[in-house]
Image 1 (cartoon, rainbow over the protein chains, first blue to last red):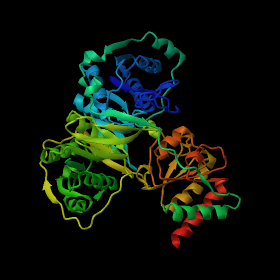
Image 2 (cartoon, each protein chain N blue to C red):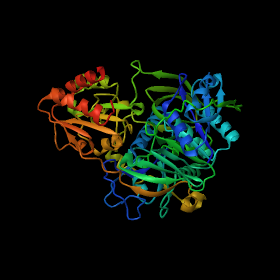
Image 3 (tube, one colour):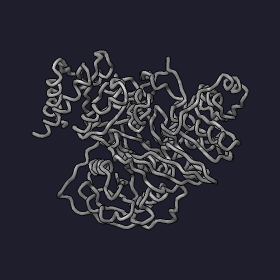
Length: 261
Length: 322
């Protein structure tokens, strides 16, 4: 069974965000880039499906500037078979619809049973691209998957919702967005890293895919201004020497001062 | 600007997050708005939406909508949009809303403003502030000149304001085409404890490494129960296997904005702060005075949580009993 795994290459979750000179993007100086953590669960599940079936190709797909190739190479080192890079060099911002359109155009013609995304791309945190891709590709999707059982031509998945799981039977091909808890992603082995160097990365130019939204003037949503969150007031410390008094004071502050209990 | 609001219900109860979105639409438009309510046996629920700003409620009340399906629920939204011809659609950013909104948007060849925390109308467009990098920054975004403007609203951020003097909405049934789903929900499994989920809670009490091991949870639980809160956890304790990941608050867990967030023995890694930094009031109890959690906390106690938290729980119970 073949899988397509769409990955975003994003700032490490430990990154301290600084605002860039244009006031609407981040300052990329010293930013360490990683494969978005939720995408790793998708990749791992694709590899496990291939292993369980003893056959199939796992293709990873990314759109972005040159550095995205490093992310793809990491996925190849973990065991993906091949990669597609959509070169979006010089495109400052692609909204969710533009991204989904470009990915769908790049994936068109491929025979994939499973298409994986993370349940959100860490950074933009929109959770839009996966389901949009499904709509454009004309396939069903299940979001926030935490468990998957393989069947014939269909799968049964558990999807996380507020305080419960939905158990969903889904026909293939389909898009799935991966949630933490689905699996424990593997690390790349030294052998895997060596092998990845020989694996192919197919390059496609965004301009050749004919995505109008790749022109920022055509984007359907736009970033106007990026800011750090407003600073919070300094902490009011309650003395701890008498725990009973500290407990009472906390309860009093919450009730009388901030009125939240 | 003409609004249409997607209303979510579960087990015959309208979700608060949807009432928040409806209230917001009413406020932004200045007039009663249209709403769409899919489900089974939901017609009876439509009337209560009037108080929150619905002038017209489009109802898709069918047996095969008893459980969620993307095809059925987006189908209902689509059918309502055809009737109401809205300029803007609001959907609460719940699990269901996050599933419905992007498919609906792509079908109409537009994008969406996701998980917004502030929303306004500027001429013919929606303008929002939304958190990015899990709240480490915020961005002002707009929908450009898109013919249909779509936003999903973060739960617990906007007020659900009832106007008891509002009239009853008119209720209109929807005809749906083929909605047999290719992704079919077979059943919903609720955890036996029926615990409140952090993403829906007004108050959250979280435990971190300071609880020293899974045997430390009862201390945190005591406060959680005293406050009627949801239980949360830091990534460190989830990764250590002390509790299931569904409780994790942070950049790779749930991003929350409760009224009150109590952090017990959580140092406040940037990962965690990103997930709860927009909480209205934050209480931190930690023995390390240098812990970063104190930088975002409203109130702090530098001390042993095993001594402070039980007394805090006792005082909360006493205060509530007054």
